[in-house]
Length: 175
Image (cartoon, rainbow, N blue to C red; front, top):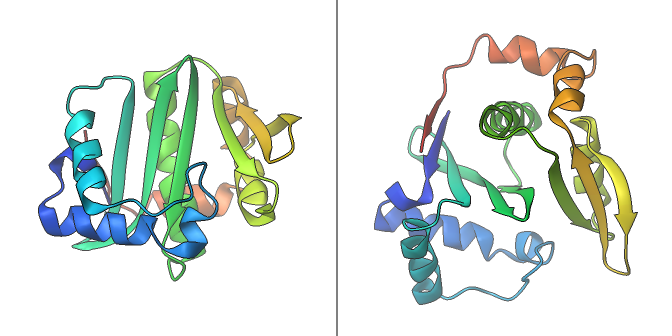
């Protein structure tokens, strides 16, 4: 399992992450749901090289891109993620477990998430990692997770299968 920073993706990998991001079932759950052009995508990746307040990673297994995880520190700290439909649920959970540990190794503040109200699967997935709702509006449900809550949640019975699988997994984070 490799978390590869977008800034290190080759052109083919950049195109693949864009193709995945532009799939209808993924983009319709994004804040910005319009298709992104290749030119805009490549420009975005270029700007990531100069920004220290955000990191976007392609989740890879060997040469296959399975999804993306990111964090953005824009006042508050937020995370985002998406995966190919066919990715094994344990692999999704394991990658999020690793990524949450990574984020909380860098930041000691609440991690936030916002999920469209019409996406109950994502809401349930976030809550399984300990996120709790703190507000909602017409379109989104807002969640947060503190480092203390994460430290407690990762010891829970619910995440024990993920933790067990983690001990058998090798991974790297290419910042």
